[in-house]
Amino acid sequence: MTAPAQPPGFSELIHAPTRLSLMSLLSATRWIEFGRLRTSLQLSDSALSKQITTLEQAGFVAVQRDGIGRGKRMHLRLTPEGRIAFQAHVDALRAIMDRTAQEGPDDDPNWPGVPPGLPSANAATSEREAPRR
Image (cartoon, rainbow, N blue to C red; front, top):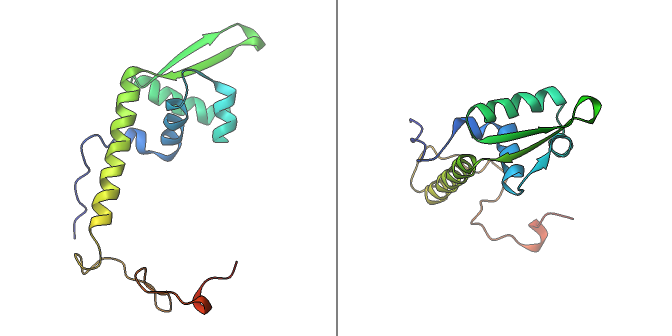
């Protein structure tokens, strides 16, 4: 069985987990300081810089550097193109989720089944079968 084609707007560049997280954080702000991104993403300076450079070269991120020496600060934001690309990617992910939710065991004989011993999602669960908290 072949994998279905990706929907329009899906971006392999954005989809990488670290870049997806970075774009998500940037989408929620006008500008954000490098140190805040580093802390939020739990990345080293070099790992974050590499991802920023990739997105900057794609035209998705704008970088503003202020100060000199130890007082240097870097602020980032999504460019208008970056916002459009990120939204298109999110929409593509939603389309994949919608398509996946519509497909299922009745439609695809190769759909992953429920492992033995576990109730199916459609099975009614009695109180004694309910997971303990």
